[in-house]
Structures are given as C-alpha cells and as structure tokens.
Image (cartoon, rainbow, N blue to C red; front, side):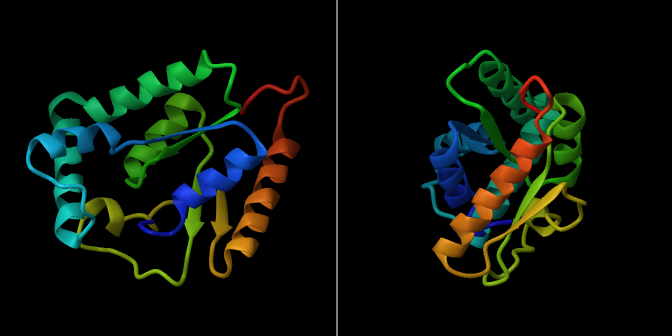
Length: 164
C-alpha cells in the first residue's frame, strides 16, 4: 500500500540482516523519466506509472522480466539473506509467489489514506497475504514489529538454514 512504510520496513529489516530491495516499478520509472515524469507521486503521477507498467507488461512483460533478473542476481549474491520485491497488483504478487516461491507481506498503516485512483494501488487489499506487519503507531513500535516479523521468518527457516 502506498506511503505505508515499505522503505522504512526495508531499512529496519536491513539493520537485522543484509536485505536487497527491488520494486516492480523501478524499470518503469526509468521509462517514465524519458517521457517527462519528474519523480512526483501525485494521484496523476501514480496513475501514469500504473498505466505505464500495464502497457510494458502487456507489450513485453518487461517489469516481471526485470524482477526475474533481480531474483537471479539475489540468488547468486552471498551478501544478502533476504530480498524484498515491492509489487502491488494481486495477479503479479501471485505470479511472484508461484515462480519464485515468495512469501507475501502487507505493510499496513491505518493512518494513511488508501489510494484508489489507479489499478495498482486500488487492489492492494484484494490479496490474502502470508504476513501482515502493522505500522500504525510510532517508528519505535514499527521497528519492534519488524523485529518480530524477522524472528518469525527465522523460525520458518528450514533445517539446513536455507532461504525460503
């Protein structure tokens, strides 16, 4: 969900373990800059990015191909133990779960207005996530919730300590 604390979640998680983060929209943003987008995140900008992602997905599956490339990089990278992939569209989330064996996480923040002006943001709650991490209070409490989440992942690690 937009403005809920995904980057802060990644920062707090990286304080606990080496973490790689990639957003499914990163490559789309590169194209958007070429089209005149200036990096803002107004409702109009969010809709533009969402529509551009849909177009590039329909045309060449470019956003997901880039995710695959980043997952391969992560799998060959001994410096990071967790990879976070920011995806908002339920179909794409499910695809990542199926293709990569990903676990799904929703960062929930009830202090932030839900955005519904574009398909990507509008459908965030149309998915059943494996985990929900709340960010409804102070940064200290959010940091504590991230630590609890991290510990729960460690408990799910297989006997050989392999990544899940």
